[in-house]
Image 1 (cartoon, rainbow, N blue to C red):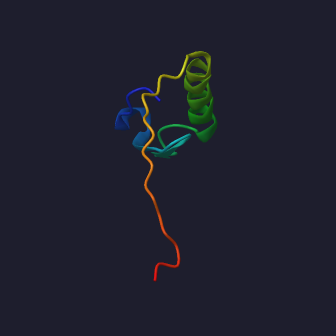
Image 2: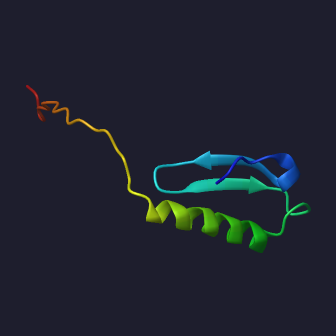
Length: 66
């Protein structure tokens, strides 16, 4: 989502791997309005190409180690 400020009704955003949790004040913004805004922001993200710089690290693991 765009920058969240308390005057927009959003008090906290907790991003995760494939989603985010939004804490908001329902007295300042209606849940349906917040959902519409979040879906509009997500639509733009779906159209962009993901850029993920990764590397593979192999860690040998021995189970039932004597």
